[in-house]
Length: 102
Image (tube, rainbow, N blue to C red; front, side):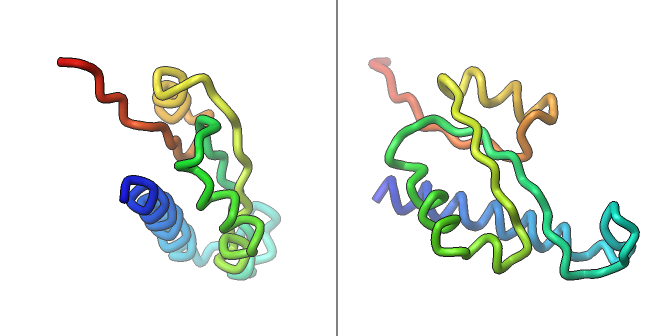
């Protein structure tokens, strides 16, 4: 169930990025004005099975079909990913939820 949740969250976040990016009618940085451009998205993630839907979606062309080109950067954990998102190194970051003994 957790994997499904993480996968759906990742897909919905990236779909939202596509929707936000597609509202700009001014064209891409190349000045072509074409709405069929590709948006490059840098994703920080940790190498765990929970992020497999991103790799599968990329392999199957789901993101490309929506005008997204994903680049994955592996990080040591959420402690490294969160500052990367805040600083703009990554547009999105995916990590796991640590449930310690409280």
